[in-house]
Length: 255
Ligand code: PGA
Image (cartoon, rainbow, N blue to C red; front, side, top):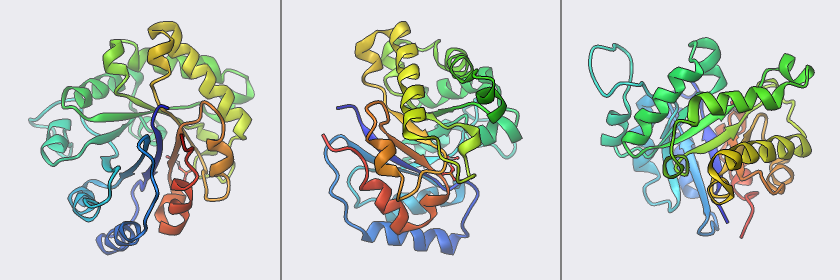
């Protein structure tokens, strides 16, 4: 089975003390992860090394950044490069979260460059896509998401795209408490897999994990993850509580 992944996206939350407490609480929990299950914790930049240290004994737990810049180094005040993340032992990076697209004007073309930057340093990008409410109300979601994938990922070869994790996050479901139904999620995930298969073939498409994000909670995760093309979740609000996120981890499909 392709990897089943529970990914936490803390966004811009937690003081250092709170981050420490949350990491402690997570590290004290024991999980019965099978070989194809993974947990990714995406924390703010100042807490990356702390998270790495706190979680180092947890097998199949990985620490992720929430963003990186397109360039390796230079006069780009305030930015953080994939090369820096790699040198700090970080293995994953979220690319193209809808909040980055909306508040920081990240375009599909810029995200293609960020994907390249991440892959060139051996980082696993968690590439986010998803439509706004108006697009769904006009039934344009499939074309919209196809276009995001085409413009940011389709320059990659099959080997490269196999290293990318995709997260489908409908914007209308993020932080709103309004989760997509498991059928809506499955429909879009199957569409994404078909788009990947048309370009790269079935074998490659079937290896790529596609996560659902948008108001995933402890009590809806099992139903969402039960769908055949939903390979886990990218979790915001509910990842800030260790018990709740623990429940989500325990909801991943077992092979
Ligand atoms: P949410 O956020 O779980 O709080 O809806 C998900 C995300 O934006 O990754």
